[in-house]
Length: 426
Image (tube, rainbow, N blue to C red; front, top):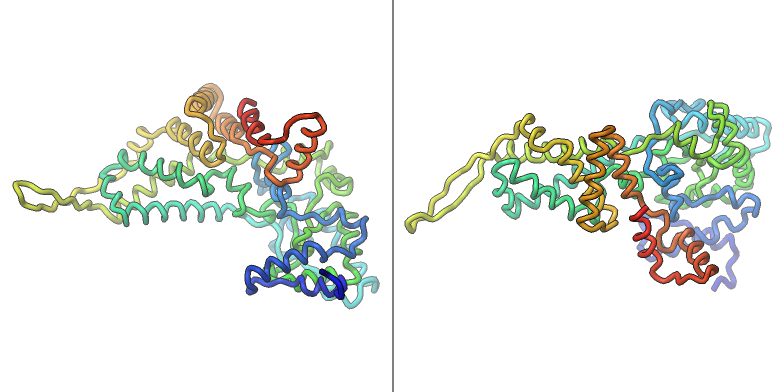
């Protein structure tokens, strides 16, 4: 198939852009994945990591116990010589040494005729992704409103008590294909590695064109760039080589972690100090969505038209949609109500498919923790129960686990379903 073509020819063909047809895009992406790094030395191959592949997508988003986390803003610090760019403190320290070495190499003439490395500067680092979740919630709200208004279902909501159960049913169906809770959002495609505080981008063209990437990979200084990244504890993103990402397991990065006061710089300690568990404020978020959605309906469509027949005549009347009162809403729908609904939401969203009896037990356990300890402990419990399984079909863990079952004379067929049932009893 490749007869008559050199690797260089194939690398040129690998340059894809988003204006190509789907087939052209697919073909060239395959060429990129296959040949772009074919001439990189074996020693440097380990520096290249595909953060869009299987479990790698969760890097910096889940802790070693597979719990969804987000970075603590107070641990972000400015990057050396990069205005308005931030990363976690130990990442910023490592970057400072990384960029110093690159710039010294440029000044000493070690790097020549390389427009990328000679002008290397940070284009993007930490990105606060919480607004994206707000947009997703707004999209859900708008979809609901469009449906109930166009279908006429909104006429049924003469008061908030008729509205709440209908909206709950809508959401439970909606989350089977969409993301609502913060733990699921953090591990979804709507969230990305730039929000982890671990990565630094030197390019701003994104992923729309491969030309910049291929040209950089072909540079005679590319291996040097990889070696400097490795020396200071960074991975290089295989899909986007102008991005470096902190390797938390690297001895080099561990030294920078130690400098910031973490005496035992293992990943669990890094996450404990620099990240926080998510989901603890989800009840307030969901309550606000319900309150605001009904309030929007009440204010924009306060009158509900009703048509009826009496003594053979057709009559039209208008009923006022009852105004929502915060005190009444809080009293009628307290935290316990939203906690029970949240358990059902997470069950549908994660597709764990606990039976109704199990859902009631989980809810009871959460409410007991809320009453005896506090809400945060209760929410951590719920999200621990619905924590994702770190094995997915086709992933590297999947292949390794199947191989393990074969070696131990166990049947690997349908093991994911068996694993899920075992996982539910943990």
